[in-house]
Length: 95
Image 1: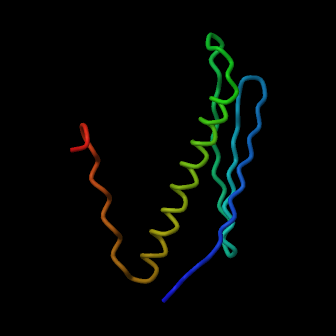
Image 2: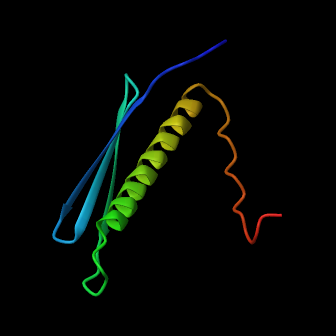
């Protein structure tokens, strides 16, 4: 059975006094999730705004992904299915 949906994602970045804040909003239609992340420039480091943007955005997206996986886990349990196993942590170089 084919299934196609479109989810909207908006990423907002704000920088003030050496701190970059990111907010990412996922709108699936019935659900809206918001992830947040921050990055701070150390006073002894060179100020490169792009790095703060990347770190804050990445952290906001990671926060959002954890929320989305949590929502899926709750939905799986809600329909009485077994929770999928956690992937094995990778150690060392890929073979």
